[in-house]
Length: 555
Image 1 (cartoon, rainbow, N blue to C red):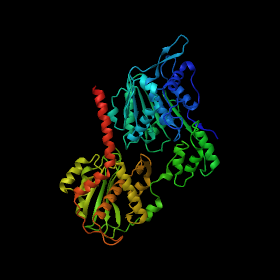
Image 2: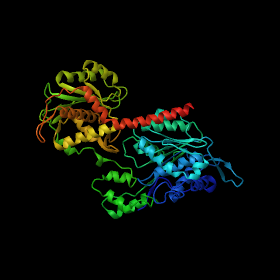
Image 3: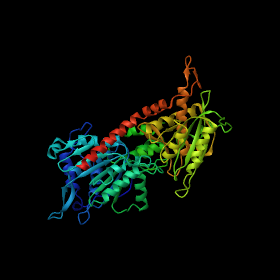
Image 4: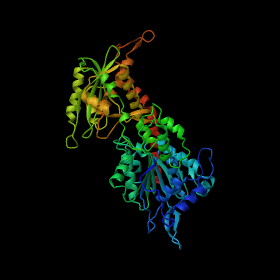
């Protein structure tokens, strides 16, 4: 069993790469930033040195062969530290070819005005790169290049390294000389990662020697991530897209992940010469019942595979909660969930019945399925459907994603003062908690549903994407819709809140529901704000970065 490579493990001739000079500079100016060898000169592995040699390869005119590169390796291989070392080289090292000497060897020189950008879709990921850099520069490098190490900015006597997150407007127009796009399997349409990647490519295209370096684990097919876009383009071009270096190393296929010997051989192949990885520990993780096989294959064997086993909810569990004969009675206390689009995704209105016995029941009011830009969602019809809910039931709240629908929600709020509440699903922490609450209620029998086919299909289309907050709901594929589920999750979360806010503790675990459902809406809004406080703090940090960048551009 041998590793599967996306390109031959070859290196250019010595007179067609500036790698020897770059490697010597790394040995002289960079140090190991952590571990038992912290502080010692940084030594790249043979595999890393060969990747670097390919990335800095030249054509006969001394121009770089590759305008962008993608490095796809297993988790723990060291992609982020390697990318950080490249950032250091691009800031202060000999990273450009200034012709050839008398022996026709390339002459490597520093960039005259380096502007290095580290991009990621979360502040934590940019921090990972910056932490590596803070510990990677030797004291000699700090003194010689007059480095100032800030949390999100590193200045040198010639230029800077900056860290930015997923707002495309922040990077649009930047004159970056080198850009690292880190962990692009996490760059999704939902977090505007695709827009950010497109803005980066536009920026570097206008500067002759500017380049990008992308790092990724194996992506999940159908998510539409930047990593998937790059792989699809490379594959469509038969692995021969001019200027693209796509470097991936996969472990060979293992039919049965419980076969310890086969898994060990596959891991040895996938890790290359990253010998610091503990194979016994990885095998234990792969064979842990809590680790999904598709997760093991993607993260540890670096294999691109479907995520059928990552379905958010088991079909049998969902179907066991179906109560197709149950109808929400008139005047019942409900919360309405609304998740809308204009032309691409579905638009859904879902009701969650707050029952007096402490349970809840969801049913679909209506789903609109546009065929594309030429058949937009009928706005007035959607507004009337929400109005009809107020006529039929006692509506506590309409919980709505305001994206694309701010005007309609304003009109409805004027008609039903205080009953329309914004709930952006982009608040990851809040949606993670709401989805977990929904799934637990289905599992424990405190939540039933009507068996509506559109809602059922949305549930089966959803997969669990791990984030720092927990498992986030996402589409299995971009073409599959989960909008009715999102609306149901939002409605259920607010129904639980209203139900519990109306509860009175009697004795022990006894709770009486349905006592006072007229909790002031300003209290509910305060609850929403508190639940999103952690993410708001992160947004504030990101805005601070933006202001720093504006100040620099203005200077």
